[in-house]
Image (cartoon, rainbow, N blue to C red; front, side):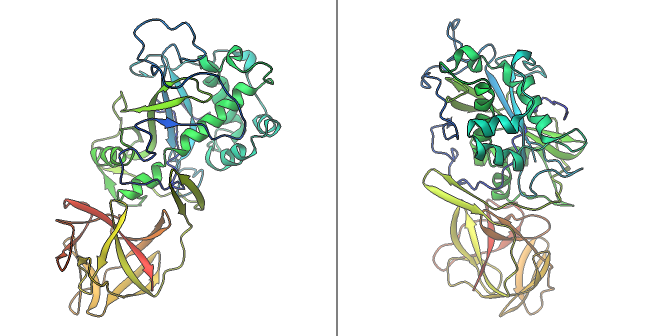
Length: 427
């Protein structure tokens, strides 16, 4: 089985879900994640408005409605791992590893509740979910909850996660289930909750929104990665690296009510990331990207597979989740009438030309003109947009946001105070 690191809740950075990036709480739930939408109607009968786990000041008698002992819940993503060797899961998404119950209320300290009730172990998860009517949950798991092929089948990982960790949740004990629940209902509730929680944590998209995408050459600092995810999610995860390669992200929660239908309360990671302070690589994965549509409150977002590069396009700036002007003929950022650029090549390598001349990057500054040496750009699809990439990054920045007739110099990367992405829009 894939080894359990302190971050073992591999919440595959799920690029297929494009949540709004303008709010510190992308789901608009006051800092809490509700996980109710599911295939199977399972109700705990518990309230989800009381004290969150780990925050009680006295003993709790009803642990069917209050997760204990511990109550600190960890969900990890690795591509919940970012698995690249061998590559598992979609190339534009992290994947699920599981959902762990930490033994201690204030940190995991490498210690999880494990193997709590072998009488409830499950071996045929596919049949279990199909029999329960949880077909869409199973379909999602088949794409996003992947085992390392060297460690065994996906089924083995699913069984392992339930047997080892799922049986330890106090709120999933058989006596806490509705009267007359079929055998295995506890496991079905576990899998559905893990999937739904994962879907609220689109790690790949959140990183891409901050200009961080997989690259064969670009490196990052630990601070920049943590800050990027905190800016999108509103709370800080823990990152794990394999050497210099980012390969796992863990998100921490307390819980109000039951695992079955309670409210997950996100918290900053109580543990430090174990990655180096700099030189961190976010490596490319092989395989195919996915196309998925997800409703997020009042907004629906779609992530599409990379398409062909248009020959004529405007370059539109996306700043804080909204379109704010774009590029003029000299390669500057403005809210005036945008230039029509000529693109030659493919998404894996192309040149860009305006009516003023070739566009290129020199000393980190983008310009277009007759004396400019053309730069070879690439493009990547993210949240329904085809984004311009320079030097392995989708991030561009300026010292201010333009308005009226003002223009701003465009720099590659996020060195300036205003950071944005540039979307290629066919004309």
